[in-house]
Length: 386
Image 1 (tube, rainbow, N blue to C red):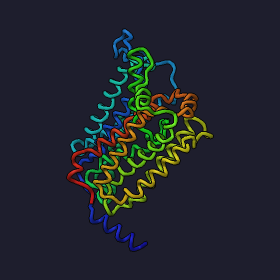
Image 2: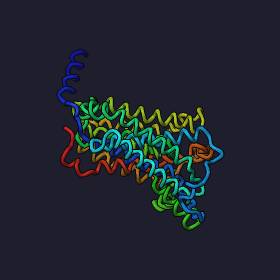
Image 3: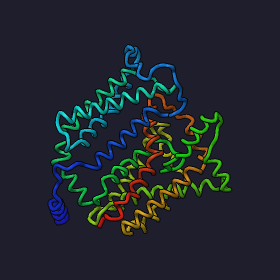
Image 4: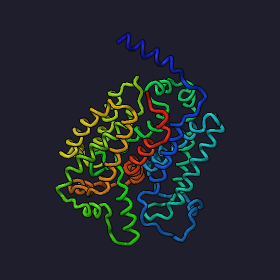
């Protein structure tokens, strides 16, 4: 162990921290988080109408008489990462006070636009108090960003470790991988079954034609599939999603990285978040409601697939990840939800967590698309990890 520790320390010394360089991963994180805020603020994207008032009329109204500490806290906390990431993303072009000012203004403008958009949604009420608390959150985040700028960007050993364990193009990919456990929060009909784009599209289409329609169900019936195919679909979806996510991590690692440990930590994080989400959103007794026979079989099948692919070259792992995510994306969009999940979902009351659940839903829908965007990035063809 002492010899291993000495060698690891020597490796870190040979990979000196990068000083005064912009962080692509932080800029990607800012874009992702901004999209998250936009989706959460406009969720559930239904019932758009013109109230007859100007979108910014809420600015001149008196402050709301009824509000809760929960609402204030959520509005402030929700915009802290926006200001923090904006300050770090502006480095090294802007620092100190100018970075704080620009980051705060950007956060306020984002909140201003989104509050105005909410005037067209019946489930949302634009509020000047929300704008004020969002602005406070942006300012706090910007100040925190300036405080952590030096230890994170100028004196950090994390950059050295990242360069030692991961490829040069891993900045975007690590952000995508970090979002995978968080994507487990939103209830899904199948374990790890992200990317239900057709469900969102069907909802919009049903509202447009004023008649319920399920595009996925129609495609399922057209393919000649029936109830007997539910279990195989669940097994394949779970296995392919799991394999695609783990391979998205492994294809970014170098030979010096502890690949097994990183893969296990990612799986443990995803399953832990999934279990806690079920316990909090539904009932503590339903914490392991996601662990169905199909999910268990899918986990075993995924482990078998990873057992062989974990030793493959990075380019093969990347292509296998693209294939696995592609298969799961097709199946999750046409396979109907099992009756147990539908009955469980009926007891789910979103209430005050509407913004939070909107953000979680966005992650659940968009994560495979983010992963495929990263995996198909053309720079991989010239810079596979060694």
